[in-house]
Image 1 (cartoon, rainbow, N blue to C red):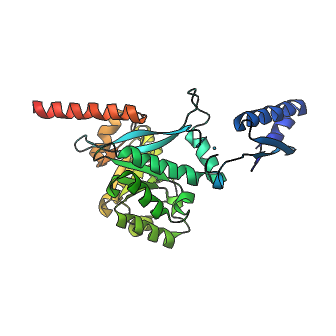
Image 2: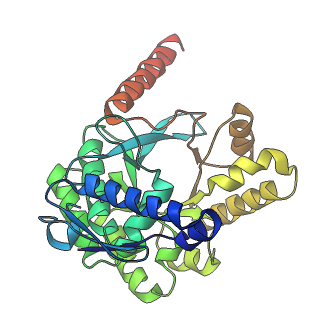
Image 3: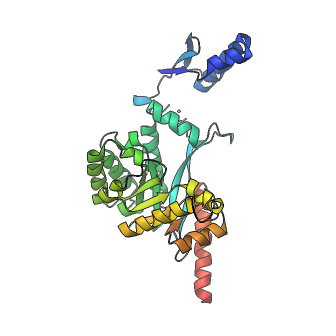
Amino acid sequence: MLYLDLDKFKQVNDTHGHALGDRLLRAVAERMRASLGEAGSVFRLSGDEFMATVPEAGPDGERARSLRQGDFRLEFQPQCRLCDGRITGVEALLRWRLPDGTVPASPERFIPVAEESGLIVPLGDWVLDEACRQAAAWPELVVAVNVSAMQFRGGDFSGRVAAALARHGLPAHRLELELTESVLIGHEDEALRWLAELRAMGVRLAIDDFGTGYSSLSYLHRFPVHRLKIDRSFIQQMESAGPAGDAALVAAILQIARRLGLETVAEGMESPAMLTRLARMGCDVVQGHEIVQPLPPQEMCRWLDAQTDRSQLADARA
């Protein structure tokens, strides 16, 4: 059973009139009814409030927000080591695409909704399982998977990770879990214990979007992480920021990471000049469209094969 209401509906009535507001309510109801199919039911409670029933959604709605129908899929973006140009890993990125090719919403829109509804837990577990399954076909590469706070605190998370690794025969050191600082806020003692369990298994750990949240240096000292991922917003603004601003901030993050023995990953790499600049600054790994855009699994396989062929050809010529 789902309860929904429309944000800012009052503004529609006040600005465009009640007649258009009524048309909007009917359009919303029709879209909901079409999405639920014949088995589901939609009811208008009052004003801009609706209720929907979804039969056979499974416990905790695990088969509801297109997961049962296979509309969610993963794309992968390679991570390139700057010292030698070697592809060392890929990040798994969640996408929502219907069979006809349309994209109902971007991850920036549907992931917050999944978090608010609690569906991020089954959705996140599906991502973890699917990423492990695919990574098993790519020898030596590490696959990075984003983990939400709700998923991380959802009970026996380390056990669910271990089960996914065992199910697909993926060695633990080839899985990297990316956690934002919000996962750690307010649950430091529990998080320290959970992270220690994961690291003891051999799983790699990374702090994602570093610099955009609370960015407490005590976390870097206390928690057993391997990597810092510098948020793409800092990288993309470096070219316009000049010697100060974001460039100085990125340089400071890189220096702190080196002192703590942490590897650094820069996201949002979109120009050859920026790649060269980050290499000179001492960044370890980069990912972004300058390397290659996120690709579906089969295309990723072909791209990786092509990189291997180029590397072997270069070694033969040398």
